[in-house]
Length: 412
Image 1: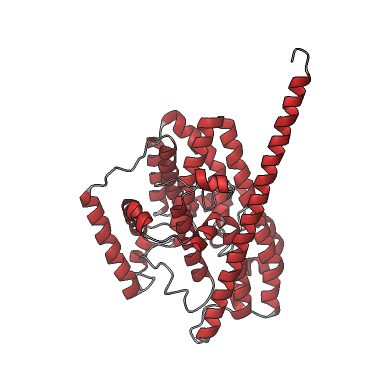
Image 2 (image 1 turned 30 degrees about the vertical axis):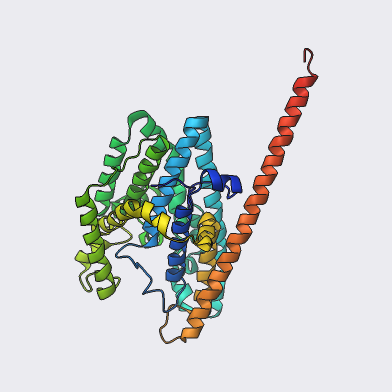
């Protein structure tokens, strides 16, 4: 996988220098594409279902987690090799705190404004989403700040916070003992979630602490399953940073052919049957469950990832550069937060997706949302450039002061 800055994990300003030295436009464009897919899925229009999971039984969330983990492993391993373990740990925790602040602001926005509007206009799409808050406002608010209460749509950033806090522990453990034990332990943890580990862990926590937040309100993503993608991504990224790529070059032909067949079958299947692979059969659908990261969903994603890596050189040479996607990808954290705000206001104003709604209205809603996201990305780029320039000027002034102090000392 090529190097880049992370969609949510890394903390590399989008300056011209950074773009030239550490960014890859292909990764930024891919992140931007995933943001587009997430926006189309989360903004409730007639396009939400057709564009949900468009490549099979895989969503943009899997790609976001994998990319974020890959770049976190690469960027922070480079930081560790260059500046030491303490600098790496501090960088991880600073980024985790920034993501936490974003989540806290979004939570206040949801519970303090969107929920009130939903009650006032009697919008069931909102009141159902925040029903626990409406029944237990103080408990929901404070447990939300503790990342225990995570309403739908607002439940992915808390997972990133946890992963980022765990990041330095993972990298330091891998530096001491290698990745084999971490990968095996992570895989075993993922496997255990397929048999109810998350519910059992929740029940134990409730028994020990009396936590009043129901299991269904702790977030749709089962973090004990999704950590497997995070560990795999960090492993690949750390190997890239240490000049020890973990993926074989070239890929065996049988693996490429098998992945291609698997992807094509599931692509056709998803669009022929729908987003639920086995309508009416819960046990088989569990194999493709998004929230538990079911085994067939995981295989579908891994097959897509193998093909993406295999064809990446050809695609990067032949495909045109979509600057708009790159810009969205470079500013993925503010754009991601903005898309949640837009989705909330759309739910308040229009409710859920409704095919009876006029086509022109749905197109207008999406066009307006993308115009806002584009503006957010442009403003964020400008802020990053100004911040980088300010840091450069501050560093130059500090270095000049040090030189003057050194020259003023006796003997100089």
